[in-house]
Length: 193
Image 1 (cartoon, rainbow, N blue to C red):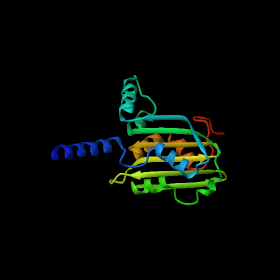
Image 2: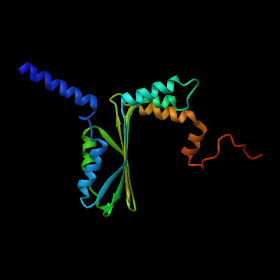
Image 3: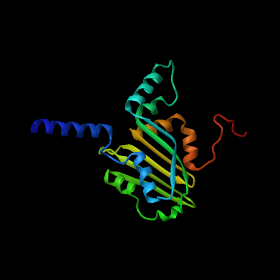
Image 4: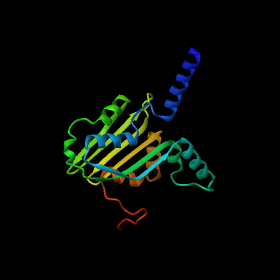
């Protein structure tokens, strides 16, 4: 009996680790934290898309079967999970009341996430969190954007350092222009002579 209980607990722990439930708050948990913080506000789901390892594996398989080179294929190969949710927000009070740290911020910090950016503007708040693997590579990205009448939550997991490098390699000249802060120009446009 004791061995059966220990085996069950070990199996349940492994299942939680594999599913990702034990690592950090989900997109839904962040939404509920904001609902708790602003009980008078209403967050109505507009879209919620989850693409896990299996779904993305199928997508990668289909993309690899396409003859020739598919732009962005290398980026897709490095992404393991994507979750995106948008909510229509109504009756949201002044978001400047979010001066203190939110529960999702502290939960993410406990799970090893670091806040890379917190931007506050009139009527909007944006948080960008990243998490590194022990080898120093960026593995997770979580974006929370609360802007007046819309809440957007995005979580991406995978080898994001490689995905970013692949994305920049697709259009290196455009990447350099954007990093320099120059306006986007049309590709292959002739320069003035």
